[in-house]
Length: 143
Image (cartoon, rainbow, N blue to C red):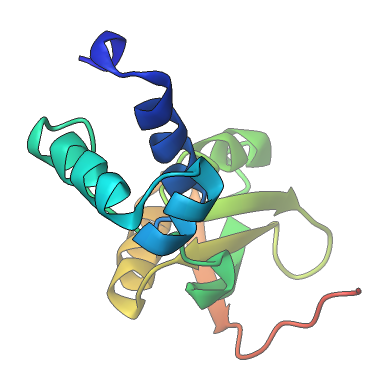
């Protein structure tokens, strides 16, 4: 289907991929077309199924973030557990650490229910003895 698109349709798609909130008027100004012509082209792209939806991208900071400290059974190699942890959905980073715990995992998920599911998956890994999770309330970043 995309091979049937003309350069203007392709340009509309590229603009909308970057910012789906662009108005027909804004598109028309960039494309040097009338607002009505742009409206018709977008409607045709939707009707043909070329444009399936208009969406938004949410900044990752809106997710629930947590830090989970994990104690490992000494009979199970820590790197083996770490390799399994990083494959769990929601686990962004895994650190093997010193101190009272063996591993620290950084988790970022869309909801508390997802966090509970991720922690449950962590607890089900062979060799995990204990988890201690702290939810991130606020994050500061260096400019």
